[in-house]
Length: 239
DNA sequence: GTCTTTGTTGGCAC
DNA sequence: AGTGCCAACAAAGA
Image (cartoon, rainbow, N blue to C red; front, side):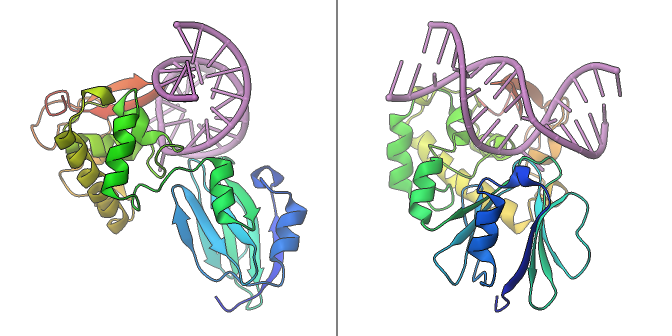
């Protein structure tokens, strides 16, 4: 927190959505003051007007250590105390951005309201206006941000709704339950460090394999595709 | 060697 | 305009 960034190395320019020069010029000599999150973006404000914004893509994490960069490190931010923050991103699908205005950034990137922050009345209003399939809506980052393939499956499993349910077929009770489960599933996942092995027994996430037993009814978990992406569900519990 | 994947984007079709 | 589907990107594990 109190440490100034002494050195910045962009080991792979592919992850630099903002030019490496701009990233360095904007951050060098300044401090990262806190960490926030909107949807799948990590926001790191500094003691100046600049923000460092990270997206991890499918796989990625941060490492804070005094060591050499871990394997797959794509960017390093070294502080005065000798420790470094390593942006590790094996599949190179993550991105680093610099912005001076988070609000404008979210508009430009079309980041919808965060799933954990949205109020129930806003959620209900938006869902009633949207068309198409339920799972697609939950995963639409412009519409609602933060939920991906795995967690949309879990939310739908806990709500007892089929992923391909048409939004037009949902009533007020369905939407209310969906809102509750969306918050619950995400909260529980965070409490368990998003580790499938630590998830509660009633979660379907550790059962993402065809033929696995449904935690509720013991029936077989099925796999299907939507927009080319596999999803898992229980045909007996999710109508 | 082949297939799949925790995400996003751009192109195309309807 | 809104929605669905696919390919592309990249690397690892089954």
